[in-house]
Length: 105
Image (cartoon, rainbow, N blue to C red; front, side, top):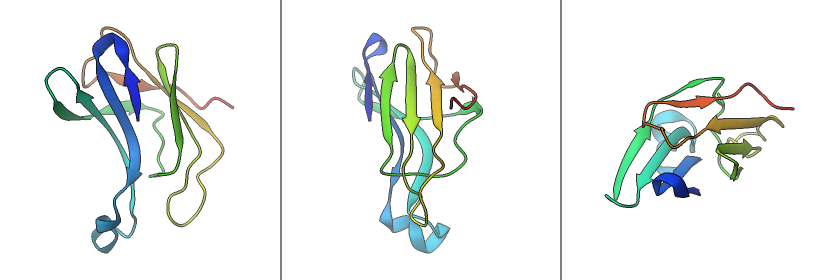
């Protein structure tokens, strides 16, 4: 969970929901959600580009300049690959314009 101050957004990537196991076979999530702290509304973000393909929890996420950096984690069955994923953020961000950069090794 990361706070994006320029727009007053709380950004959540991935995570864990134990109630999903029976229906999906995993408990980990691979979605990007944004809480607008001014309006207190949640939005699921559609992303494009080189997004992480493996659902994950127990990962690290932080801001580096105007990018959300995601690293590591586990997908319940195994550790996620040692790769860094970055989501571009900007002051012109819309809920449908997040872009994952290529892998950074």
